[in-house]
Length: 582
Image (cartoon, rainbow, N blue to C red; front, side, top):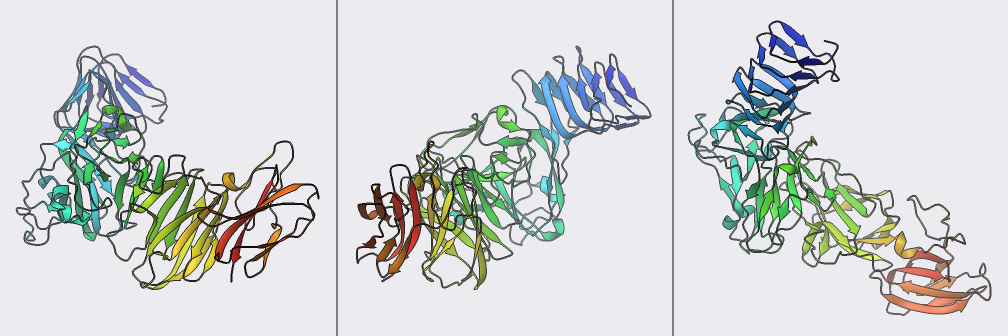
């Protein structure tokens, strides 16, 4: 068919109907009967009747809209959805014959159901799980009245009585998480095994399911009554363990749709940190996401069928969601996040596995764990995967936002590996400025602006071996709109603002504790301030002089190491990193 189709009465397909283009929708005001073949392609099908309508026959719709106050019912066959079901008005009665399809690239969803509209009956919800390594997947089953038997026809269950496969006495491969069981204070001690085929799958819990290599890839199909309307997800907090180990809750995406964690109708109280964490079985890493920032693929969008961690921090934690948090985004179980202009991403890789930490600038950031800005670090469950985090007063962080209140920002890193070998640090940044990786063991400083650093790491290394030093441009460069400022910063490889020229700074180390300054290009009557800061931003030495000279600065004998030297006039500032030896 080459045009849109508007059916005033009933539509009967006795042979074949092919909607050849997505721009040609179908609007039906009567009943739908299909005894032939319907090829919907990308066509939108809308039921627009004024009296009750029926769907009879088996077909797959790309997108289906119910727009009938009198309601629409499936009375025969199976109706499948490839993309979305939208119930704009009325009640859609499934009679247990609706399927939400899922492929490697697309998972169908039920869009936001407005007040006054409803879905009645059970559905079958598919969830495609990609191939890859055998291992745990964190899954959600947002339906009532279902048991673990729903999984028994899809994957190999072990340790589950009644599975009927001869492996009932083997280790269990389906778990849920109960923070109260983590009495030792260790996050990993909270797992509770599902041991009987008749145990319910709770729509308000997330599950960790081990999938064997022979089960991958796989399309899971779960049949039940989907959650709709407002949902309150139960959370717990028991106060055991350190801040990094305590308060973890594995929760579900409670809707058969992707959801947007940043939507204002995802509401938590003050006892819940804002970060979310997801396990990626293929990278063998936890992703994290908070306040617009993600690591290891973390995103604001949570896929249909995905379970994820939140962390509670106080008594009586709450989490509520509404239909409006549903999203038309089609994320995989893990989604990449776009870079931010205020962030630096640092990745450590061994060529097979990698880990990522993000540091950034925020006016409310502190050196502690800020639960609205930062994300704690969850280590990989695979000991072969490298570990990289930034340090705070409250433990290691995956995402760490700090104030840019010093000319230099120093952030200690935590680095651990399980095997000796060659590793690579790489940096990706939207921050204008300079970034240095200090290797305390080798006593070296490496510029990371747009580059990488290859290093030999050992299992015996001190985890505090590396330190990240940030010199954000907004803290070290001043501009003047009337007179073009010459900004002097070494090794700068990031793009810089127009009107700035980067060249060698007019200072150099000329001996132990001595810095020579060349001011011959300055006017002899020009007042110049010379300042030197250590890596914490503390002022070590300052002096005022005039141009046209070549002074030599003798730094305090107690100082040795990296510092930032600046030459400042009324309108300009030139900066250079110097290593002071003794």
